[in-house]
Amino acid sequence: MESVAQSLFSLPAEQKLKVARGPGGISGYGFPLISAFWDKKIWSECFTILGSPLEHYAKLWPQGYPKIWYSHSITEEYEKELGRLSSRLTWIMLASLGISKEDVKWSGPKGDNQEAHVLQLNSYPACPHPDRAMGLVPHTDSTLVSIIHQSKICGMQVFQEGTGWFRVPPVPGAMVVNVGDLMHILSNGSYVSVLHRVLVNQTQHRLSVVYNYGPPDNVPISPVPKLLSASHPALYPPVTNWSEYVDTKAKLKGKALASLRLYKPLPN
Ligand SMILES: O=C(O)CCC(=O)C(=O)O
Ligand SMILES: [Fe+2]
Image (tube, rainbow, N blue to C red):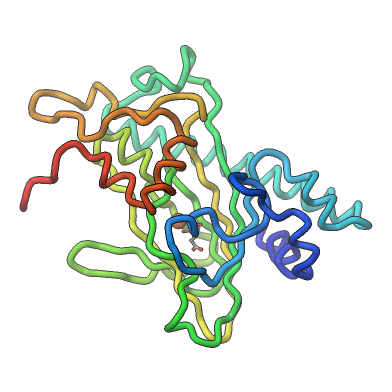
C-alpha cells in the first residue's frame, strides 16, 4: 500500500488536483481532514479514500489500466485485511472490559452490522524549516481505533501526561494502533484516546497509511450501559453518529471530547 501511496503522491500537482476534495467532502486529495482544527496551514498532503477509489484512480492515471487495476486491487485487499484486524482488536479491547457484541447496540441483532472505515494516505515532504512547520498538529483521532503504517522515517509523536511528547519510531513489520475518541466514549474513558502529532524533517519525505475504523455511520455512540453505575456515571452524553461527531469536532477546533465531558476528572 505504501508503494501505491508513493506513486499517487509523486504525480504532478495538476494531476492530483483532478481529484481534489470538494467543500464539505471527505474523499479526495487535499490537506488532511484534521487541518480544519487549525487556522494555519500544515506541511502535509493527503488522499482520503471513502468507498471505492476506482473512479479517482482512473482520473489520476488516464492511460494506465494495469496501474489502475493493480492499485485498486492492492487498496481493496489492504482495506479488507485492516478491517478484519481493526474489528478483532476492537472486540478484544471491549471484551477485556467485560463487553460483548450483544452489549453494544450498534453491532445489530446478530452483531454483524457493518462497521465503517476511511483510508487515509499522508505525505510529509521534506521541509526546509522543520522547526517552523508541523506535519500534523496535535490531535486525537475521531475513531474507535486507527491503525497506522509509517514509512521508515520517524515523525509521529504521542503525548503522555508527565512525560510530554515522545517519538513512536517505525518498527519494521509493525503497525501503530491508536485509541480514538469513539472508543474513549464507548468505554466511558477506560480506554483513553491518544493525543499525537507528526513532525516533519529537513531531508526526508515521509509517508503514512492510516486505516480509520469506526462504528456503522448511522448509529449513536454512548458509554456502554454495562460499565455504568451510581459510582461510575456516564462521563459523556450520547453522540448522534460518527459523521456528526467529526463535524462537531471541526467546529470546536478539535476539542469535542473535552467539551462533551459531563464530569471533570477527579484530582489525583
Ligand atoms: O503520519 C502518521 O504517522 C500519523 C497520521 C495521523 O495521525 C492521522 O492521519 O490521523
Ligand atoms: Fe491521527
